[in-house]
Length: 302
Picture 1 (cartoon, rainbow, N blue to C red):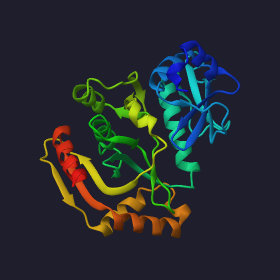
Picture 2: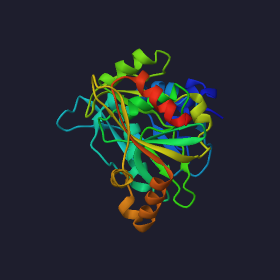
Picture 3: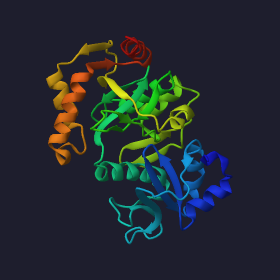
């Protein structure tokens, strides 16, 4: 059963109930609980295509709760909790959606060790995964949003989940947060995209969330083998460049972009070595979506 099959009133009731709202995100079930009225409406719209997990065991139990500040007693705040603990400070109430999404990502990043967890976007085309590792500000989420509305299947804009024994990557198609100028860029390029409300004044500026296409969410239980690793970088007014990268450089950049590389130790080293050997490695510099799509389509059609 999908979220959209509930009425808004039923959705609000589950979100605020003792058992909470249990959502399937790829290989994980997340139990979400909140009594906050302003969170239910955007969450209902953005989570419409996700599967309700009923009474399945949840890997993550999260809450958004009201909070009062002693320094600003008349300003409403909210706090994100995971298993009753607050991993970061409270924020103004209109930041509730960003707090929830960032909080779930943080919980995955620090608690998941049965996958090798890369900090990268991942999409699938022609049956194989294209990894897009990049540092913050490189435009990977924006590029990923463009790709998944032009024939690519979303795995994640944030995590590459690698099963180290099989080499498979597993989808985790969650909401994709666009920041600042990227919001307008995607609205112009993809007028059909479903965007959440613009949330101003966060630590990362203005944020709006992209809802993944329904087809990507419906196939969140279908892993795939990676074939390409492309390190993207958006640079204004630069001609497109898609160049080969030495495997040694790709190894260092990919390993340093893994959340739990040091935790897994030798297992992670062997997994990244095998991944680099199996994949074509490239650097991508781009300034517009059309040329990037042409280049990546040619690469993934080869």
